[in-house]
Image (cartoon, rainbow, N blue to C red; front, side, top):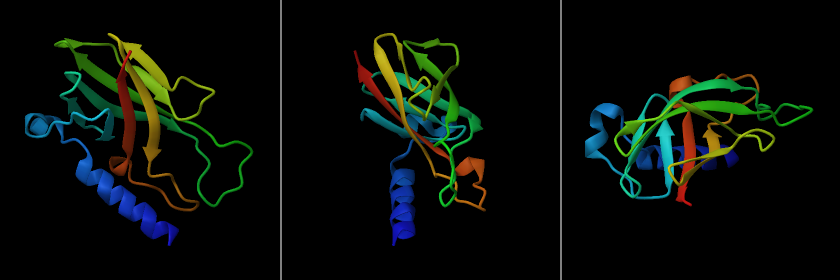
Length: 138
């Protein structure tokens, strides 16, 4: 039952996620929540920004089904274009002991989740990863 819920959630996220950079003008979002596939760009119409999920620097999160001493952390690299200016790459983390958000030009970018969460004994194709980022005006 739980695996069906996760699959349904992933399918819904995929349909609401942003398109690749080549198709950026065909899909826009005005929501605060952006769901971005690895190596793809999301154009947020509300804030006039383009956010790209560049790479997963590391993912040491405890796999589902494993017994771990701590929950682990995933660090993600992003690129941002706002006000027609490309900014330096920045990094956000899933664990609260590390940087989970950053403010650039008055907009706070907070990493909410990295999906899917790896299961014990299974490896996830990196191209199937989705970063969930919330952008809010400060």
